Image (cartoon, rainbow, N blue to C red; front, side):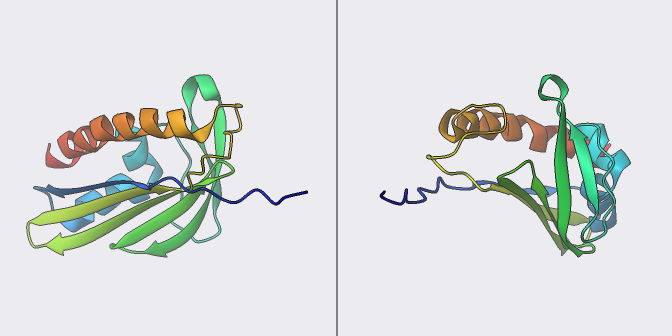
Length: 141
């Protein structure tokens, strides 16, 4: 039997400069309250190894696990069975550069809900385009 090769799809990546100090942006991406305000309800704790859930509405509770915490510059967590979400922050004084990376895409894989990664990645990419603006409104308020 031939081994199926992994065919990765490009990570979803957004880099935006917010008119907000790094501490405020960090709280928005690395705390349950902050992440819930602009993303989805969750019980995140910025502690490596912490297991938590994101309430993905119609898709139910998504299991997650924090993999990297480097306050206030980087937070990564596994999301569901395949994905990794990373927030990288760079202090620009009164402003903060945020890079969001949603990785783990593979043309040969299906989500937990039986949908192929390729169209889901396209949908999520469009979703993130709106969410990074929602995050901007939250941290700049």
